[in-house]
Length: 261
Ligand code: NAD
Image (cartoon, rainbow, N blue to C red):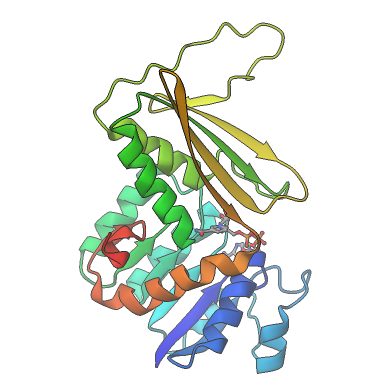
């Protein structure tokens, strides 16, 4: 059995992960941490299993853990990964907004060989394919824009998935010809530009997580779209990462290597 601790256990994603870990016969949920435990409703799966959510990871000092799963905030995630590697615990991180310098720092630690880290901006298998297909399309189409749409509570913009998609499209050696617009009345109406790709972020109640990548060329467009209807879509990818992280040396960014695509 793989012993798992979840950081951000009282959060939306962390609660879902706790439920998925508890439901998997190959996994053992040995710890759940969230400093907001007193202010939030404890996920039903944890109440049913009689698992106490701890307010800090200090409470895990005497607990044997194989894998830490983190769905918190960017700053907390970096601190949690550093703690995990120091304690020989592998990490699966879904938290978005982690900066490039921090990712470099995590890579350095993971490369030291003490413990491995899997970091994925999107654990939904369809989203992984959307990024892969977008990379392929970027070799053919020279213009691309991304519209990412999320629930109003999402703090970071653009989304980690949009940043990763733009980065990967931008790395395809094909000149981008998205025109620079002449914005007049409303500044920012053309979105933000990353790697030659315009990104538009929509935040509205009623949305969960959606992204459309639109490629343009002479007389045609190609739209690659992914929709999630609830957070359960992320769980198969999270479980794959939990099972694989111990045998995946160093830092792995994205799920592709684990899916062998
Ligand atoms: P949320 O606000 O519902 O939950 C985050 C939780 O983390 C909160 O309960 C907070 O109290 C807790 N937290 C903060 N600091 C902590 C610490 N030091 N230790 C333990 N817990 C701590 O947010 P959410 O919707 O669950 O999203 C969490 C993160 O996951 C965000 O960065 C979001 O963008 C990302 N996310 C990633 C994926 C993916 O597939 N990779 C999917 C959805 C969301």
